[in-house]
Length: 380
Ligand SMILES: *[C@@H]1O[C@H](CO)[C@@H](O)[C@H](O)[C@H]1NC(C)=O
Ligand SMILES: *[C@@H]1O[C@H](CO)[C@@H](O)[C@H](O)[C@H]1NC(C)=O
Ligand SMILES: *[C@@H]1O[C@H](CO)[C@@H](O)[C@H](O)[C@H]1NC(C)=O
Ligand SMILES: *[C@@H]1O[C@H](CO)[C@@H](O)[C@H](O)[C@H]1NC(C)=O
Ligand SMILES: *[C@@H]1O[C@H](CO)[C@@H](O)[C@H](O)[C@H]1NC(C)=O
Image (cartoon, rainbow, N blue to C red; front, top):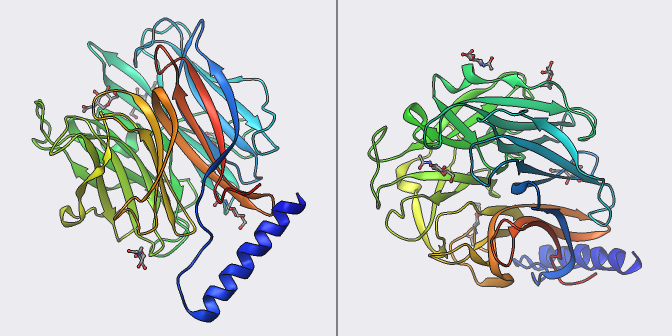
């Protein structure tokens, strides 16, 4: 604790010095793993789709799907939550948040959005209604917690919001609340789907989560038609807000359009539009077609995924000091099997920590869901 206080004093002092000298500088990012905790182990159920968030009361919540009868995306599931009030050292036992009973067609996560103004936590998820091969038709749902993630209210059917789309799944990961103009305070999360929502679409709320509507999107090509390998088909996504108030969405490039790497889009109007002029493929962010995590914190853009063009393995953390233009920072976190991830940050007098929840294993990437805690500046 004493050292943490000293570190944050160093940070403040360094920031002041930089401000006086009018130079851009900041403590050197040097992520150091300080804790690893296996939060779920696949035994009877297969645990997948990790989501981690910091609550308004600075607790951590970790959420995952427990797939009951097989590891496939459709099918019966439980959604479980664990909570930590001491920055990830001790976690509550897993509690069932959602269960779809014995249905063949199950629920899927989903993104968490924390409204830091009202203190309400939202969870978007979908419930599959029809499935031949994978879920072809589903209904999106939204539920909330007003007590820091301890209890959750009855889910609301949000089908009306997605304008007749037959399928709309957010994230998985974190939606965000805009901290800067335009649309400061806006809640936003992006999702993918099929048919009417074929591409990546964002939903927004400007009244603290009471009403929602579809905002900007990037559609797939060819739109609404069967795709072949190489087509433009953005899929699961994670968004962040950059220091100019613009939004960056990093997406899974499902059919490897242009590269086996990530697709990135930007919005400068709070998610109303995502101009094609600002869309690019980030060749450095090599990816096999999987969900990845991204987070912006104090001038640093972090990105994590299984960094292989062919396999879900070799889980790496990268960081950029120029909004993702180049990625000089690289740290391997796990060389064997790894899959989806989600990350959040905790920054206080206790220190600055990145908390990553990810699918990990030896024989398969679905063996465990691990929380990894890293000290961002390498100090404790
Ligand atoms: C919420 O607000 C508090 C106080 O301003 C801040 O310390 C914290 O980082 C914020 N959390 C998020 C998730 O923005
Ligand atoms: C939370 O969910 C409950 C039950 O669906 C709903 O009545 C309430 O309006 C929601 N709160 C917010 C802030 O959206
Ligand atoms: C959800 O709402 C849609 C449209 O309002 C409706 O068609 C659907 O049946 C609802 N789902 C459930 C499970 O009630
Ligand atoms: C997007 O990814 C999901 C998850 O793997 C997959 O089931 C789905 O088929 C993909 N959607 C499209 C439109 O390719
Ligand atoms: C990052 O984005 C911000 C906001 O657009 C801008 O002020 C800054 O110059 C950018 N940094 C770099 C290195 O591009």
